[in-house]
Image 1 (cartoon, rainbow, N blue to C red):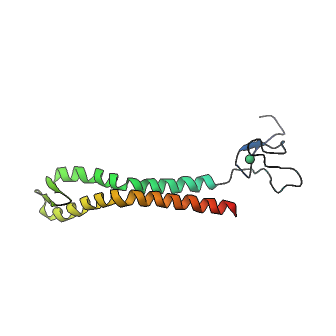
Image 2: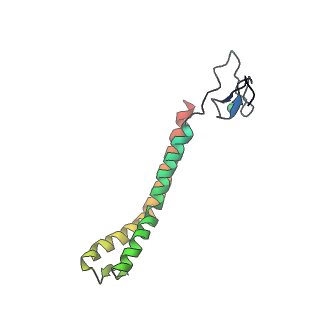
Image 3: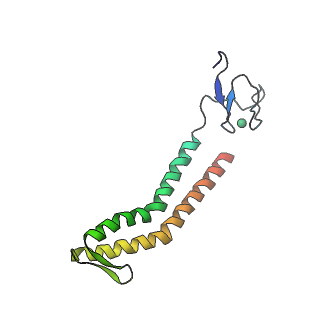
Length: 135
Ligand SMILES: [Zn+2]
């Protein structure tokens, strides 16, 4: 790092720019005296929100898989047999059968519903961010 030149960030595209330049080399935003653009000390925190939403959607999309990962060892331990259609019977824990059927049904339901819902949520978030940036 040479003295006198700090690394700043373009307010338009978040590209790193030197404090000495008068325009962004990436998107061409003008940092001259007549321009409203000014290089920022830190990049805008939009990227953080985006990854947070992405993680939530990913977890939602993977929830049927995680449910199955939890179900399988439990079903195996309790000697459960059957499927979500005919119902599941647990030989070692009859009281668990009803819950097991519901959990299996939820997994199937989740695979059909949760994953598309997560994708839709992510798309809505992406559109909201796009609209927010234009304002
Ligand atoms: Zn830029």
